[in-house]
Amino acid sequence: MQRYDAIIIGTGQAGPALAQRLADTGRTVAVIERKSFGGTCVNTGCIPTKTLVASAYAAHMARRAADFGVKIPCEIAVDMKAVKARKDHVSGRSRNGVEQWLKNLKGCTVYEGHARFAGPHSVEVAGEILKAKWIFINVGGRALAPPIPGLDEVGYFTNSSMMDVDFLPPHLIILGGSYIGLEFAQIYRRFGSEVSVIELAPHLIAREDEDVSRAVTDILYGEGIKTYLNSKVVRVRRQGNNIAVEIVRDGVASQIAGSHLLLAIGRRPNTDDLGLDVAGIAVDDRGYIKVDDQLRTNVPGVWALGDCNGRGAFTHTSYNDFEIVAANILNHKRRRVSDRIPAYALYTDPPLGRVGMTEAEVRRTGRQAMIGTLKMERVGRAFEKGETLGFMKILVDKASKQILGASFLGLSGDETVHSILDLMYANAPYTVLQRAVHIHPTVSEYIPVMIGNLKDLQ
Image (cartoon, rainbow, N blue to C red; front, side):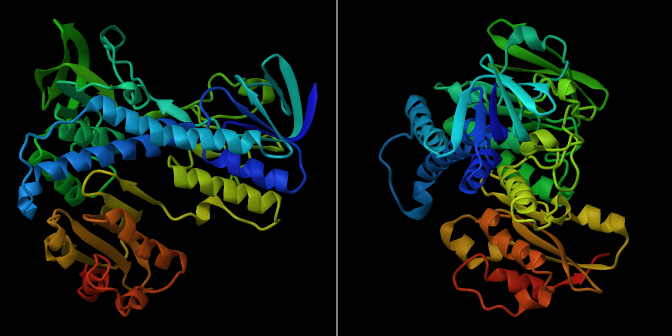
């Protein structure tokens, strides 16, 4: 039996940083990883997918070269093996960096194998029992495979297995029209695949406002991506060398046939094989570990961080989980999950940057609010770059002048939205940003213009 001050299960975004902080205080730390160092972001999420987005963008801009007065005297071709090799290099560099960081960290012992609780403060891995006063669960999540008849017989990709693709699917059918599904849809359409997206909800990215959804749908439609909304998948089956997806839309049955199938319907936590019941750690009905506002489980001395706690599904929220836990237990400064302002991005091109409440959510509160919008075609920087699709939208509370939320769909939307986010964290009124003098020519310089034209939300 080995004793440590702390055990960290999983090396996703929260784990390595926490190991470093604990080791810096002189504590002994055991880190357990059963597969790939770095977790989802490094291996099958943010880093590899955004690397693919970059390759797809390069192909898209090469095809548009004539729009900028550039002549390319040949047909644009995408070398999928080279695309994958570049993705593997970028992802591998990050994965190896995390692994070497932990294995060279003084006071940290790395165990490679599957962890399973042997008690409230003991974990079994590779035939050894490890004990610690503190245990931190950082095991992430994986793609959800719904019980669709025929699914197991036809074969399908998830966001993880798509990382192994080094060929061009002739026709990729994607089940799920949200963040993961839409990013892959545009990536592979730009690589040259025919792409069909099937979504159960009445509009894509269902959590967003309908005007945002319509604009994203129009952008994808303009690139030749077919979308089937309000469509329930009732069965999938083999049809020769193809996969046929049977759907019902508005009471009418039909089918879509394609060469390959990608599931992007949802995620589930990697908590079903940890022996949480042995430790008495409570989970909800979806398998997410129940935590309080400081990420503590119901078992004293055990915390859950990252995707497995159901309190955030992004790399940045996972890292913030680390900051919350470290501040509370090491610095004795109270930090809470509820202090976090929701913010995220959809990395289509153009990207969608989102912060705070949607317009629909603001309306449901019944509060008096104001709204400002601006089409990207009015933004000089976007017009110069030939990237004028999308729009910006901001919502503010009329009485307090506090910003309630914003949606930036357009050139650099994933970056410019941070000026809104930072102001919200500062609890400053929108008038501070309205009076700011931004650099020209940029996208950000139009934020004060948009705010200056606020109107009552009807």
